[in-house]
Image (cartoon, rainbow, N blue to C red; front, top):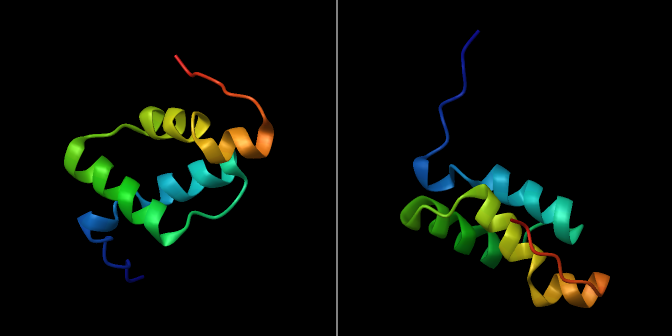
Length: 72
């Protein structure tokens, strides 16, 4: 069987970001969030834990769920 080509490095983190949005904000990631966080992870070394903590501390999370959670 032929394996599909690997994703270009610039798209490396999109699955992680998409899953974090679904898990935390309970929605699909929008293009701006997907591209912005992908760039932060790719170019500035943002970790998955940092991404999830950022989403948990976001205004959107607070508006939706009325609670702020800090992940250590």
